[in-house]
Every structure is written in structure tokens, then in C-alpha cells.
Length: 296
Image (cartoon, rainbow, N blue to C red):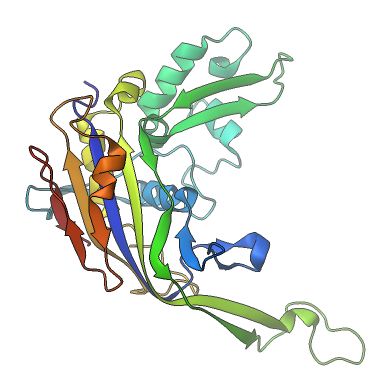
């Protein structure tokens, strides 16, 4: 059975001396807009959700505490660092008979609706976020494009105040390449590291029952997303994001009493005001009381 009620949610995140989302077109500096507000893109957040679903998690009870057995989900868009099936591309994963749907599902005579349904049944991220299966010409001489529109949307996270970005020049102790004649070290010895000194970020999202009917996204699937949102940065440490530098402070979860929703997402999201210290204020609506869950 698909999702029975509309859901809105908000994440309050804390960054301390870390690069939450580097911009490759700007020397991997933390993303920020022209006014200096920090940003974590929706693609970045969905990548972390996928990774946590793939790594393993426990569902939450009514009090927000993890309980039960460890669950690991099958994910289609796997990162290179976490891929478990050895597939070198999304096309290979989709067409492989063992881990995917097989080449026939994407062939010239394939039923696109049937293929989309099978993909949603197999991979949680496909039935959650949607996916475009756009592959080039096959052995049969025909390309394929199958679009699945997902019910779960996640907005980019923005800091509540402009962030201060510190850049530090670093030096490698060993050259990565052979130095040129007359030099002791190669040019790649010098580098830069960037970090956000401190910042509170807020991200919003929603789940649509109408779109969930098409992909088969269920109430249980929503509970799985809810569980991993509280531990978004566990197992995500790197030199740019050391352990403890990224934290989920709060997950705020609104469950409406019907598929259409009692209030618009814009109005629900606007009821949350987050302060620079991570505290927040909520303007509650009649008949729509949010669940407030501490981060992991």
C-alpha cells in the first residue's frame, strides 16, 4: 500500500570547522551564495540519505529511539566508494541480470511502464527520489529513456546567517609526481583546504502521496527515510568533514491527516524559525502537531 498521508519535514544541521559541501568549480570552497549564506545542495543531502540506507540503520520508535534489527536497502545510485556490486556504471547495474533488471527490460521491445515498476520495486532510492534511465544505443540499435518521478523532494540546506569561510594553505611532505629539474618538490606539493568555521543550516523536504501511488513508496519507506535523516553524517567522515564536525541537531516531522494535506508545504515550512545558536521556534497549526526528534 502506498503512502497514506502527506508528510513535511525539516532538518536543523550544525557545522563546526568543516567543509559541508565543496564547490568543484570554485576550488572546492564551501558553497555559499552572493550574500555569504552557506549552502548544501539537495544532491549532496540525497547522496548522504542513499549512503545511510545502504550502510544499514534501525527504525525509530514513537519516542525517536532506534530499535529493532539492522536494515540495509538496495540502492541504485551508489557512490564509487560504497558500491557493493562491482558495477562500473548505472547502465551496467540496471542491465545486469544478477543485480539489476536485465538488458531485456531496456531493450527495443521493452514495456517502459513495466520496467519503471520493476525498478521502483527493486531500489528504494528510485521509488523515493525518482530516476531517469537514459541509456545510449544498445545492441539492438535503439536508445532508451524511462523517467520515474519520485514522491520525496529535498530542498538545499541554507545557513541561517552568513558563514565565515577560512582557507588554509597546506604542504605535502612527499611529492605526488616527479619534480622538475632543479626543484626539490613538484608543483602539486602545495594545496588549499577550506572550512566553514561555524554555521547552522536548515533543509526542508516533503513526501507526496499522489506521486507515491505511481512508485509504490509506502508508509514503511517513509519511516526508513525518517530513521536515516537523524543520522545523516554517521559514516561520512573525511579530512574535509572530521568526525563530530557535522551534526543533525533536530528532525522536525509533520504528518498530515490526509493525502492532500491539511496545509501547504510552504505554510508548514514557514512555521519554523531557526536561530543562529540552533534553537528554534514553531508556530503550530490546529490538528497538525509535529514530532521533534533529536539527531543521532
